Length: 71
Image (tube, rainbow, N blue to C red; front, top):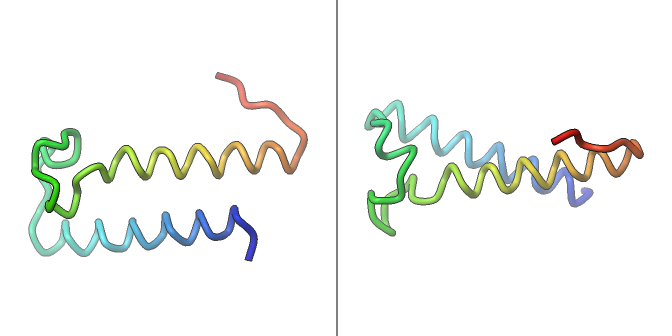
């Protein structure tokens, strides 16, 4: 499995955990957009970590195709 595929698998696991948590507990915007929920909260730093992984996958895909990311 390539590094890109490993990152995608990690993202899918994160999505599954998020969906399970949301269906069981509901998610308030403050839980999703801030890290004030506490270090032990399941969504602590979720959005930031997911964004970092997604950016890495995008960069890898561009490198594979020899294209550039427009920012």
